[in-house]
Image (cartoon, rainbow, N blue to C red; front, side):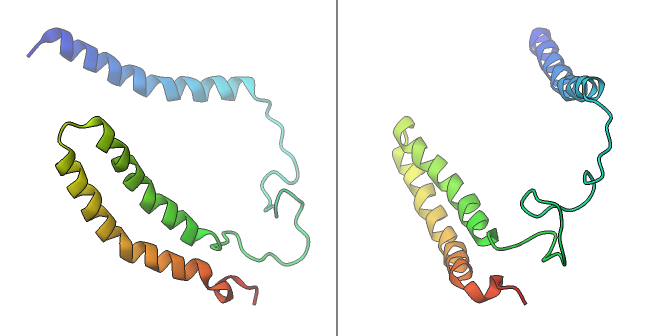
Length: 121
């Protein structure tokens, strides 16, 4: 093992663990400690709450989130076609991942189109 490589990896790990801790300490030191009345209460589109709450976590856009999160890796694999010497391997991964994604895409497309799931009771 190369001692220089081990030292650099150790330094990288230490720095990557220290940066978030330092960022937290700096933001805690700089930000004012003011407690507002509405700070811990629920908000509806940024407005103060009025009346009965519809829910704390509305699932209306969850199918679109599933659709995006399942198609994003596919698009990343599509980019690799242009930068790889082994185009058949990447094409195989693209076709197989698209075949695996079809049931998920069908499910989220049906869920996103069903308006009755998202109506208020």
